[in-house]
Amino acid sequence: MHEAVLRGLIPGVLGILVRRGADFAAAEDAVQDALLEAVRVWPTDPPRDQKGWLVTVAWRRFLDATRSESTRRRREELVEEEPAPGRAVSVDDTLQLYFLCAHPCLTPSSAVALTLRAVGGLTTRQIAQAYLVPEATMAQRISRAKRTVSSTRLNQPGDVATVLRTLYLVFNEGYSGDVDLAAEAIRLTRQLAAAIDHPEVAGLLALMLLHHARRASRTGPAGGLIPLAEQDRGLWDTALIAEGVDILQSALSRDRLGEFQAQAAIAALHADAQVAAETDWVQIAEWYDELVRLTDSPVVRLNRAVAVGEADGARAGLAALAGLDESLPRYVAVAAYLRERDGDLVAAARLYAEAAAKAGTLAEREHLTRQAARVNAGLA
Image (tube, rainbow, N blue to C red; front, side, top):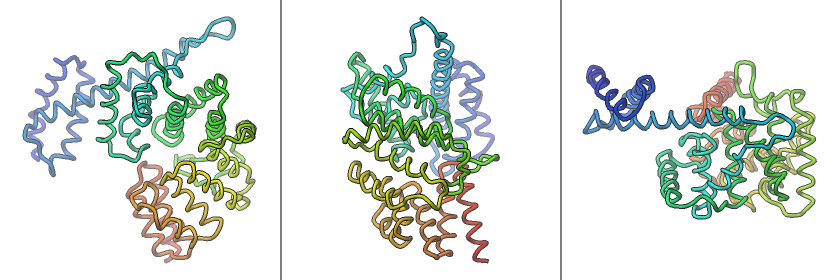
């Protein structure tokens, strides 16, 4: 691809974006993004209409940036509108928007995707990663959901299960992703728990609190990931842990077990161990058995393989891993860990390096690269 060709197309593409309503600075940013995408895509898949391709991609980038900025400003406005303590009435309607986006005319998966994009502020790529589907597939799903609700009055709220799923995914993205949404997800789940007496709402709130309690210990000073077993447990927020455990115990006493309560029970067992060696992996593996029964999720089965490996030995963990799809995110990293525990250091080093190449975030990639280097150093 000739660099001069791209440079020659820039003025025309910029002009088209400005005529469509983009301000010049935003148009420049969008065109730069489109040029980077062209450098990546054109060598293997050159378009017939180069200018048209650039205009289409740049306009999409501009719209994504505009929507993201609008969502950010809306959050700031909500903070500014928050009334002072006293007689003022709350004006925060975010939770209501979650329910309205979970409209009965949409399938649960489409409702969750639409809510994450329209209200949660997540990008299509982040949502696709959460659902383990290609970005293009998720973009089509969101577009269909928008078309479905475009002719429907959003005056019929959806069900609690769909809203809980959405809040769970928002929290997960805030906890481990690029955008800090964890505190917002906890705030909204607290509101929901105050409004609805539902054991799974309580289970989700307990799960969030127990995970959030460990947040300060999850990364080092330079931002590198610290595995759970190596975290400084003195940094864990004991008040949040105590609150989460109390909420969970109350929910479990109602004998209406759901997946969020089961996940919270696993988090509580981790929080209960003063040191990593005291972790009750046998109980954790049993809770994962319950989660598999409730969800039949491949991600749950992957996590269960780790727990089985800790409770019953690496060979048992590898046996539990054997029947799973190797394309699952973190599959290779789990295989590397279990191979290392089984004493197969050559395979472990190779798998850690392979997992690093497939990692979805820079922090995870650096952590897995360090693991591969550590095992290789042991071999040397």
